[in-house]
Structures are given as structure tokens and as C-alpha cells.
Image (cartoon, rainbow, N blue to C red; front, side, top):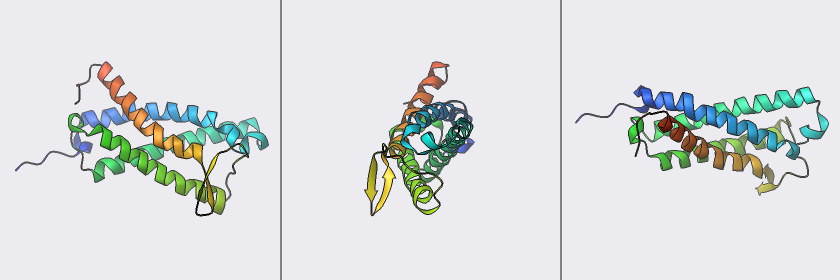
Length: 164
């Protein structure tokens, strides 16, 4: 029995990720980072230049997290060629992976290292005595699936193969 080649050997899969999913994720993440700025103390305590640097830094980090989460999911699910991807499953698992990392990162950066702090406007979730911001968690529950959906649609609109 012949096995299907893994996703990373499929040119269409690599192109969809690089030229559709990641650009959508970057744009959506930039908008999200800008919208949630007032929920962090940085908004009222830092200079405009530092805020701009932080937004760029966080957006780049979001793209890396999104790429790593999708790669992990595609490898773990043993996905093959793009036209056979199980889109719903991939989107859900990528969101879960991104959210799990973000919960850890928020805890590490607010509680352990102290790289940032939430303003009083940030809605938080108490996880065993640790307050984690809702908006970073929502970002990862929503944006990977949306970026995959938009990436798939724009790829199809450009005349790429239709996927089931």
C-alpha cells in the first residue's frame, strides 16, 4: 500500500501557508494587538515609540506562534496534500495549540518575569490563582481559524484548486 506524501512535501500546502494563512494571521494579529492596547499598562505608561515597538514585536511573535501551532497540528495529524486537509479539525486544533501556548506565555510574562501587566480594564480569568487576560485567549481561539478560512478563500479566488 502506497502512503500519501506528508503536507510539507506538497507545494500547494506550503504556498497556502506562506502566502495566504500567515499574511492573514499577521494582519488580523496586528489589528488585534492595536485594539487590545488599552487593556495593558503599557498603553498609559510607555512612550509612543516603545508602544509601536511592542506592537510590532507582539505581532511578529503572533505570526511565529501561529506558524508553530499549525506546523505542530499538521505534523501530529499526519496531514497530507492540501486538497485532503481536514479543515475544521486543523482549525480547531491550531486554535487549541495557540491558546495553550498563550495561557502559558501570559502567566510567564505577567506573574513570573513581569514583562507586562494588565490594566484594570482587562477582563481576566482566574486559573488556579493566576489571572490570565481574556483578550489574548480569545485572540487564539478565533484568529487561527479565521486566518485559515480567509487564506483558503483567497487562495481559491486566485484560481488555486478547489478543496473539499
